[in-house]
Image 1 (cartoon, rainbow, N blue to C red):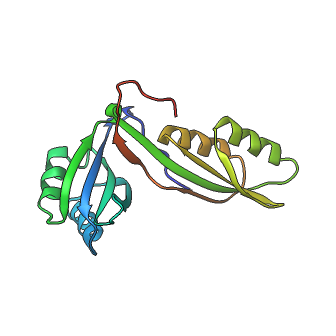
Image 2 (image 1 turned 30 degrees about the vertical axis):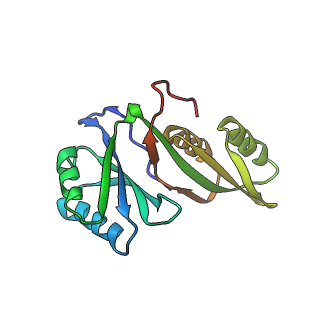
Length: 181
């Protein structure tokens, strides 16, 4: 089961904050390993990591890295990443200025008594059923990390066959007004 997403606020011991980095890299073998190794050697905790080709030519990939701010000062992270040859561009996305999304896929066991409650949870979360059989449903939610957290909490009362979350992807907002989804 995925670890719940931390909030921006104060905990019993200290404030929690994440840096969201959008890193454009050359799509070459070993680049991701070098970046992950850099974080591991420095003791920086990666909270979430997502990678995909950034263009049709597949010459570049975009890596979205969510880093625990307490373990890694932003300027130190940027400086270390800039030293890597295959890193083309680094953008720090402030949470209020970023549009973040995550994908949650879950297969949940159902029977005649639990099916209506699962379907209600799916509807309330604005999720979708993507596969079904007599004893289980697979659902999908592409939404904010908070929406994925909420759906995951709602599903805790049901028997999970599997639950996976992708981790965040993010882009800068085009407007100052946040969208609902």
